[in-house]
Image (cartoon, rainbow, N blue to C red; front, side, top):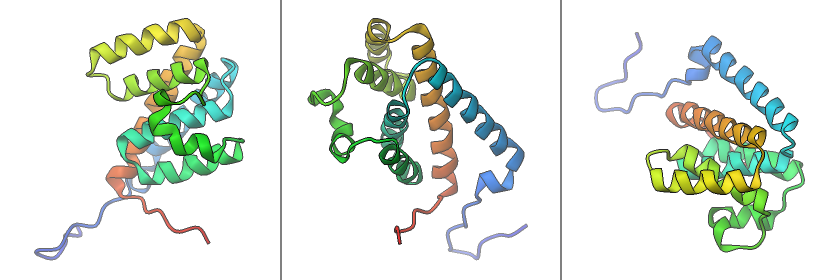
Length: 160
């Protein structure tokens, strides 16, 4: 067993590498969730907005890096990405996107029962049942990936 020297911070274990079968199962879940989102009619930019908003709440630098790039590749604008933390205060997001973002936030912070009820009510008005399910699963999955990256301290390197 490798132990850190006295007084030094322990090196983080990349749990995705340490337990590859568990991580592979999470990746497979993510692929199934992506397919469910597509089948429910959610476009890639909306899925990436959910991934980014959840990652912002959780403070996951690695997932923010990965999903910002994915959102831009999917056609998202830098303006909307820049104001995403304040999405409620802009008119840049559609009713569908607003419902999905609220539901993703409520999924990420489920202890706030009032916010959860409000988000779910808004989602029922703007999204189909399949879309509601898909958004919740997207949020659950990115929350899991956030924890993997945060607890592993996955690094973010400068673009070259």
